[in-house]
Length: 459
Ligand SMILES: [Zn+2]
Image (cartoon, rainbow, N blue to C red; front, side, top):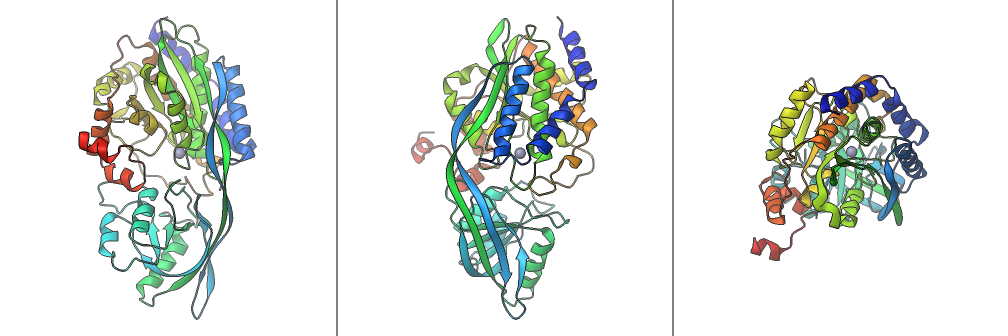
């Protein structure tokens, strides 16, 4: 069957079905949060596996891997002094337990420049650091990098402030390894209140109390595939993380992306036997605590990696209309996807931009061509991800449906391509990509730099 006919069938199927939305509702409303080690995660994993099987996928399995679970207990800041009061906060996952009294310091957005400016005053203090970036800044700085830089500068605690008003405490995992100082999330409003106190110059002090526990747990990646025909040995992966944080069901981050993976599986599954390359669908576990599931997947499937032609990652993808494809350091694929978008009569902004903060990263590091589908343009929306407000009402059914169509259509095009232009990178080429990206320092700080000093010398 020609690609146009298949494309129309896929679009028609998705457009005339409410399955994408129903799957999102189940993942959020029936499973609840899907934090590592929770019953909700296991329920969601079983659900996705059952759906994969019902959609005609083969080799459906839950692939186990070891992870470090974490459970929150009490987290409280008490402002000390003449008028003591408590300031609500939540512990960031992997936060160590503590009960300590500290002076506050404000490090703004926690950029390297701001930390350098205060370097002589940071030691032993609780560092207030805002999420996001100052408006004029050139590169994104992730929470983990801010935390590790503050810790290295001598901070005794990391107080992470949400950058959106709305009285929403922000969460986000601390590095799985090397996180020694406590880290907690605050609302924008409470955080600004503490910043103002620091600015008055009265050296405000706090008592920080955190109770938490870690334990080894098993989690699972959920996989299933549609075997290809004449190019069955060439594998195309589409994946998104199935886990969420524990504050709410993570509707945008990432039940939305997972609903797209499921809908692509359903619509493409109806064309089973007509797809040239093998399509593999994956729900990754424990993305939120350091990309553990995708790392485990790539390690377990190392022998198969040369066959993997492309990995498409869907993270927060259904939270808006999918219209941007970032091909992590694969400029050679831009013309291919431009042609595909033209054939689809769909406006897609295509770049080769790279970042290391989702499940594509393990594939990129192994030299596999990868892309992330997302959104660009229009007025910015408030980011509710990693707050208790990342709930179903933040997802627009029509946007989710359109995004599912875009993801499924792109996968169809890659599955059927006559001459696929993606090439695997050697380790030297991967290191070059990462070194020349704005994230080389960040990865070193976050303990995610995979090459030894000896490798560096050889290069
Ligand atoms: Zn995510």
